[in-house]
Image (cartoon, rainbow, N blue to C red):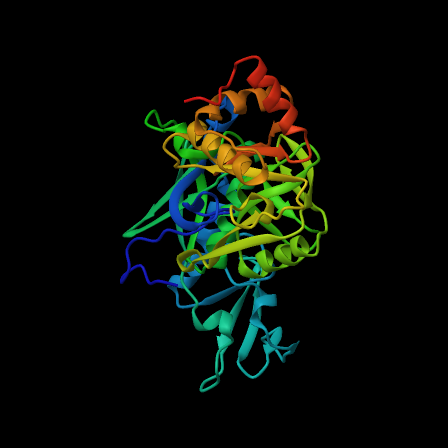
Length: 403
């Protein structure tokens, strides 16, 4: 982890990433490029706007800091949110030690319980290798955090070090936010403990730049979890597209479930659960996000990819992604191109808007449920009697064979 003396600005992830690489595709699959977007905003609620402080934590950490200034190495008795490595993190066998110590930490040193701190003091043996948890041991500092409610962003300024978290979920309660915040700071060995959260409104927030109007959805398979950047599924919950951000091991677990055709569960705070059913095959593209130790991956059903459709397909999908200049026009263009491929009768470009509207009216084209980086989606029923529909439209002179 970066030293604040050398590197004075960090940006690290909190639950989800600071900016999510959002996948979008030309014709949904001919190529992919990546772009950064913020996740979401929320309408500020009165309960989010009250300052939250944990004075007990502040007093406890101040006692720890005082001992650290005396040159003591303090170890927490358990994971207590104090920002310290815990006894269980030492990774070596603990055995009872002779007075005045309580435990021997392998050959590395000794632990002695300090009742005033409610923690242990570690004494190293000269010449012995320290446990990994102590090799990068950092003295603690207390800090306050500023919560931008609209942007769901937390900023911590601690001396020359600036730390930013996003994807904060204040509706969970600021007590829970503080706990998660300190857990993440401890995980990355920041040496910072936040004891106070100060919510502030941001009149400059732009809701249109965020992927979700509410909480970020999560995809689960029973063993792994990842956060969703966008999705598209039909009325039968068949999954046409899903974008995910998470650790590679979690994403790989979800990928295997998807490729095996097993159902996945999508959850969203305040919205509920949705069961998603994989289609036959998916194309995938991965983008490493090394600064966050995470990856962004997009899975697109074969049925949604031009050039991957097959004559025996009963239905196909059309997808339009965020960043497309004219989403509605692009959807109609994709529709008419697909109909030209699927039908044996000639289709004129001039029919596009009329045929699109009539197909939707006759429910042979149905909207997909879309959100996030996938802004529009449709399902085309290729088993419908398209020739009858065309004949009817010609008879009504809604379309014409003459240009």
